[in-house]
Image (tube, rainbow, N blue to C red; front, side, top):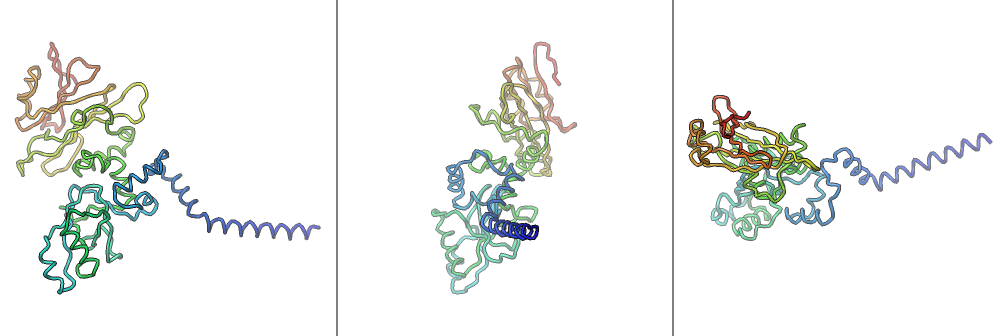
Amino acid sequence: MKKVDKKNLVIVLLSLIIVGCAGYYLFGHEVGQFVHRWQNPHMYDPEETVDQSASEAAYYGHPDVADAAYSCESLYFYGDVGYMTKGSLRDQRAAAAYNRLPDTLLLIRYGEEIEQAEQKGVNFYETRARFSLIETYTDNPALTAYLRLAEEGKVEYLKLLPNKRGSLEVEDECDFRNKYADYFDPGVSWMRDTPLAVKEILSDYFRSNEGSSFTFVNDRRNTTQVYRLAGFTGLNRYTNQPKQELAVVLTEKNSTGNVTERMIVIGFDDADKGRILFNEVFYSKILFTVYENPYALPKEAAPLTSYATPAQQLIEIKTNSNRHPIYLYYDKEFDTMIRKTFSPEDEESH
């Protein structure tokens, strides 16, 4: 009897192993996706619908973009402007057509998808990499003609010019989402056009413990009252041009009841190194106005003309809980934005 029991036990165990192997073969991919979702919940929206996935695919012009979260194979440009230029001529019989085409064939913007072509062994972030396009640019006949030559093997595919640091501003799907797209939507023009230097500082802040509970304002307030690029620290002394610095209101995510918002000002030194110059919490909704120079301020704030230079833009903050506006101006000595209010007693608020 005991021998029969052991034999049956062995048969049962072997059957379980066979069934398990077959199940893993058939459903292993789905199990892997489930584990990936469980380990990386930030990469998935639990309320995402098929329609949302389809709309994302339509935006990027590629039907597989919704599945790229697993493969990470799609490539996205994350810089300000990307210059797509001609590669080398491969077939001298195409020289006349090649020479008629302009060197720069396309300008791409933050959030546009490209794909690596040829030389698959070359890392996509190296300057030797060549690229093709996902989206079809029907209004660019020169580009269409060039890509046709590339498909025929007569020319190399497109080159992406490197940035000032000599690197290509391209990330794969996962890195692009984690670093930028989770915070800056390519479909929203002011987010797309936020300078990369500002994006990097803000995305670092959003990933910090303090910033992770905040996001951009998305209500009836006018964008110019909660987001504004301006020159708060004055002109760049090397170029004598205004800097692209940012004043922005961030609001607490999923807030219920009491409102919590932050006013953030990001500035740059003459070497374009950025830092947060002002970061303050307000327990009410806020709006701000940027004044082109100290002389454009309201009469009550006229004393600020003695603190700020004509090239500096100043900020007026209003809340629905404070009677008097708050003014911000840049103090070069302490490299920070100074907060000042004007009341009948002309008190300074810190």
